[in-house]
Amino acid sequence: QVQLVESGGGLVQPGGSLRLSCAASGSILSFNAMGWYRQAPGKQRELVAAVTSDGSTNYPSSVLGRFTISRDNAKNTLYLQMNSLKPEDTAVYYCKGSKQVGIARYDYWGQGTQVTVSS
Image (cartoon, rainbow, N blue to C red; front, top):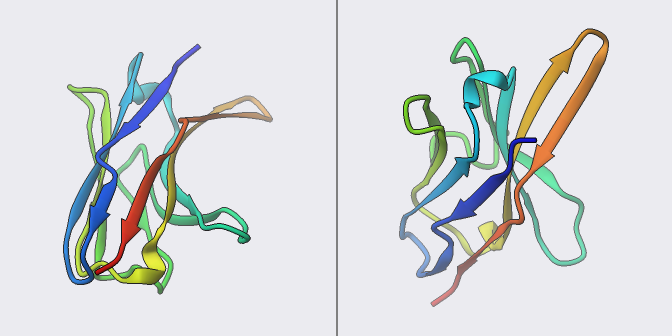
């Protein structure tokens, strides 16, 4: 079973940048899609960026133009570059990998990394 481990979170001032990493214990080529999600206190977990195996990306309007998802297949690592951070970006950020096997889909989650945007 592949394990995902996030890193790179921390405290940053508004307008600052952070890069999150998600290291997989196995090949990320085995995932049909990968993504970053976040969950703020009292809110539901939401998608912030996704990338498919063919390189297609998807972002919600709240982060479009500020966040960039990328994957390094050789390093088995997924990244999230976050620029122009806002206080409302404060949340625990999770990495997810999804595998489609026939009609079944298997999701793998990391443990999360805290991002706090505050002056």
